[in-house]
Image 1: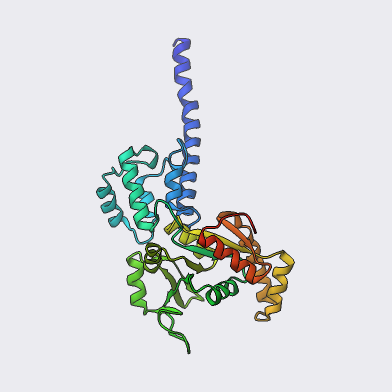
Image 2: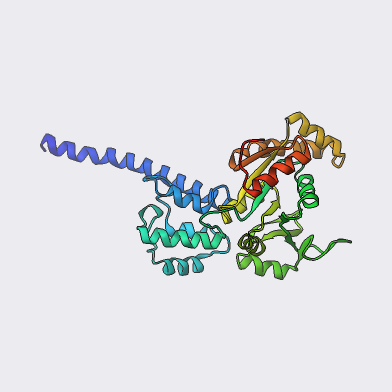
Length: 306
């Protein structure tokens, strides 16, 4: 065997080892990407944008896996959507032609209620426990009637004084299941292993079409779901002036025992670390000031006067 032949027989083994390592790394990156998509940490539109980068995990994601990341889309519906878009099941996002990409982007915008420009269809207010999200939202409700507050649907029965359509939309479990199957929620969750709560998509889209600003006050996980389902929603993080102030507020409420306070404070540390996921950060040093800044953002004033 000649030296050239020996070289040719030795090289493929090295190449195979390197290729195997690269393939394993690529599979892990895609698996992480799909998990972040499903959890709401990444929105479908952002992944579609990232897929323009050659060699990225988004670029190597199959169209079927991408479609399956959408809420209420299973294998049968994903197949139907893919055929309607005229995209082969073997196609990866990075390999889409211009017309295919344009059709897919149109589908994503229609599915999520996103528009190509203008005022965000929804402003989401989230933040750590005891930061005062509910208080700021209540202040806006009382002093800014032009701002609509999103009304959630729930499977729990009405409490005394609660009105249908004002405090909640009250539905039974079957009704909630139908809304879920129809992809009618921007986000939803089961609370205390009992009742389910969800934010209906329809009123948000209708308000956006009328040009009415709408506010949704929710927890971090719900905000991530909204980001996944409506990429052009504006996410606002309400932060405390300091950690000590947050602790003082939680203790001052007097609604939790020592064990529960400790658990909530540990959760708050994790929630504070998520601030970079948000489009804007407002420090809640004074409720009227924080509320005024939020209303300014919703009206389109994005100047730095925080």
